[in-house]
Length: 103
Image 1 (cartoon, helix red, strand yellow):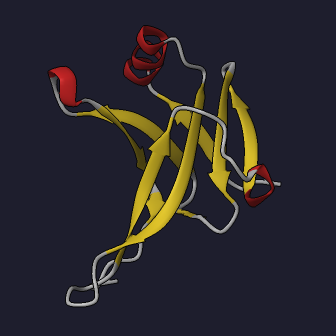
Image 2 (cartoon, helix red, strand yellow):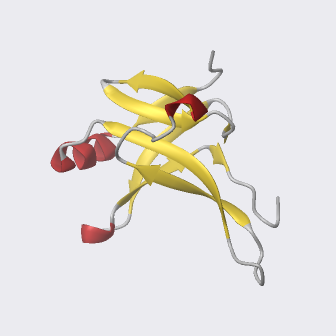
């Protein structure tokens, strides 16, 4: 049982509708190389995960949201919003804890 809410902004709903999608998968991955500092980043996909057993599934306003089970959500709300402009728009999870070198 989740102890946080998930909000999908109108801008994100419009973004998904224009792409003909109704699924958001949020994975947390490590980025960096051996010579650089590693940090977690959110990997957002617009299709169901390949390994659904590693994800929790939520239906939010008719949109399927898959969130990696080990992801840490800063309470009380995970907001899925749009950032960027024109062709560089992307979905950004706000309220998701991502480990960085300063954390």
